[in-house]
Each structure stands twice: as structure tokens, then as C-alpha cells.
Image (cartoon, rainbow, N blue to C red):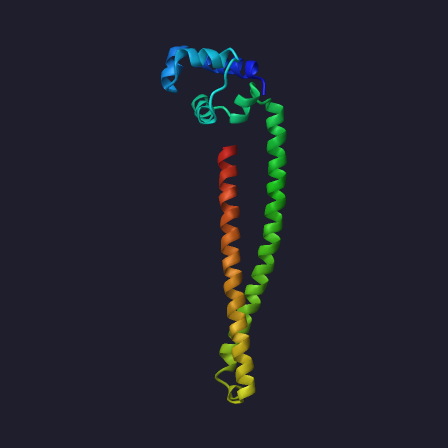
Amino acid sequence: MNKEKIGKFLRELRKQKGLTQEQIAEKFNVSNRTISRWENGYNMPDLDILIEISDYYEVDLREVLNGERKSENMDKEIQDTVLQAVNYTNTEAERYNKRVRICNGTAMLLILAYTLLKDTSLYDNSKIAVGLDIVQGFAVGMLMVGLLYSSYYGKKIRAFNKRMIKRQG
């Protein structure tokens, strides 16, 4: 971490907003001398103040700590990499969701079969009745697990997609 570089960056950010050291000192509840020491690279702000500074100047905390703005080209490459990772993750999630839908469909068929067969004479046989009850319990369990899984991961995917749309728009 280069204190001088960070100090110059902080000075540049302050000047871009057209503010004096006194105004910034008042904003962050420190002395004018403290601001001067930061900008000359003698001292560094505490982490909580660094976070406030990055929010106030609307820059990434990493940019403040690096003492420079991120390059647009690097930003684009990082964004492309993240989007590729998201696409892969969403593809994998969709594959798992497809499996869950198949399990849910099978469970529904088993429940339907149970419902149709329980009113027949087959259900009078105690062994078949126990088997059908086990099948029903298994099918309901599969259905519940599948619905919970689909709901949880579907919600995560939708939330992530909304965040990505906001960033791009």
C-alpha cells in the first residue's frame, strides 16, 4: 500500500468535488491537519473512514486503497469473467432444477397412482396397502424436497439476474 499514491488520489477526489480540506475535515469529523496528513501520505484514515470516503466520493474501496481508478478495460474483462461464471452457474442450476422437476413429476405420478388404487379392491390386501402407503410417503417426501429445492435455488437465480440487469441498465 503506497500512502503517497493514496494521498494524491484522495486529494484528486476532493478537488474534483471542488471542496476544501476544511470542508472534508468537517464531513468526516477530523481536523484539517489530519486531512493534510492523509493527502501528503503521512497517515492513513482508519478503515471505517476509508469506507465512508469511498461511499462519499462514489469510488470502489479497492480504488482508494490502490490510489487510482480501475481501468475501463480491466473493468470490462472482470465483468465478462463474472458474467461467464454466472452463466455457468445458472446453467448448472437449471440442470439441477430439471432433475428436480423430473423427480416432482414422478412423485406426482406416484401420488396419482396411489389415489386411484386406494379405492380399488387391491387396497383390501394388507400387504399391498402397506406398500401403497410407503409409496405415498416416499412420493410426498420427494415432492416436498423437490419443491423446497426449486424454490430456494430459483429465488437465488432470480435475485442474481435482477442485480445483473440493474448493473447493465
